[in-house]
Amino acid sequence: MVALIAVSVALWPEFAPLEAATIAELDEETHDEFRSQMIMPLALGGDTGRRMAATDAVRLLRAAPERPQLQLLATYGQGDSLTSMLRRSGLEPFQAAEVEAMIGRAFPLEDIEPGTQFAITLGRRPAADEPRPLDNLSFRARFDLEMALNRTDGQLAVEKQVIRVDDTPLRIRGEVGGSLYRSARAAGAPASAIQAYLKAMGDHMDLGSIGSSDTFDMILSYRRAETGERQAGKLLFAGIERGGQAKAQLMRFGDKDEFFDASGTGEQRSGLIAPVPGSMSSRYGMRRHPILGYKRMHAGLDFRGRHGTPIVAVTDGTVSGAGRMGGCGIAVRLNHAGGLSTRYCHMSRMAVSRGQRVRRGQVIGYIGSTGLSTGPHLHYEMYRGNRHVDPASVKYVTRQQLTRAQLAQFRENLARLKRVAPGEALAELAPQTDEAPKPMREIDRLNQNQVQRVD
View 1: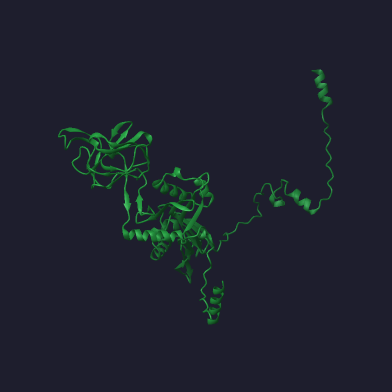
View 2: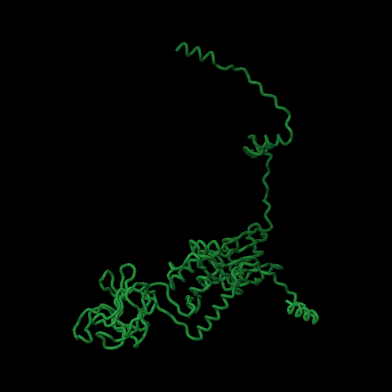
């Protein structure tokens, strides 16, 4: 212990004052660099550090100066009203209601979409205890219309500015490659348009049959304004080409915005298609047999139809049976994915053979009255795991065929869409000029014709 104390005393530092190192004169640039890093009150020239507290030398202002104008940006929210939005922005209730009435007379208020931004400029207060008056208000009412309220000579007036818009559709084409979705995204297609494209194509063909060397073709509505904004809309056309030939062509048409193929046939988006277009005459369940005369299970649905009406496969499958099947007469049985199978009875003749692969909507036979039947009709059965189930429990897809007049309009619209060049809508919108074209002189017209003939 004594030894430790002796060592501590021997190593104890001196208490003599330390001399500060002499600092050489610093140039202005180095001095500013040091000054920015030192801790020093701001009032004494420091860039960082504590602020000085107010002293008796501080004199309070009677009133702080106010900005002559206050500019702000307000957003029209979901379920919002124009009056409440303006009141949140600082307008008094009477003036907010007046502005709403003025805009309502010039533009339907219900057409203002949520998320619309209003640029608001508030003027100088008439008095210290009064709210600021509205000097200016502007917003984009529609893609092609901008509205503004401007104060002139103390009065507000509504002004409309129509924006020139080009509606050329946007056409995007490219090779499918390893992934149709990724290839379309790389080509510039919006994700929503690709989803609509895949849904439309999936309703009319097997997406697995699309090859990597095929060419996808999609056209969507597209708008570009002279102010620079661009807006992509819904999918108008979906197509697949193989070897330069159209494999599938679908276009949106009609009041319900459904997709129709090039032949004018449309389908809904889910479920199985109905085997025949006729209505049902007998449902699934116990009933008295019209020929045997006693009650027994009716394990299917009966569809009305004329002799020779085509019968189609409700979905893709393989023909597991084709020929006479007892009381079912001439019948076709199909095996589908997921352990599902269907049988079509009382045909007059078949259009497929055993082992054949069939596609959804493909004709497999024609309505007849073979077997135990009282007249031409289709008896349709459905099995799951070799046990019959009620086919009515499955949702069917309805097919719609265009009329002759509608088909002519459809083909005209399709031809007009396909004339759009890929990427044409992405070009810059040419500025509009008010100058009228100068009349061409006769000698210039003759020279132009001569040049064309030489070419």
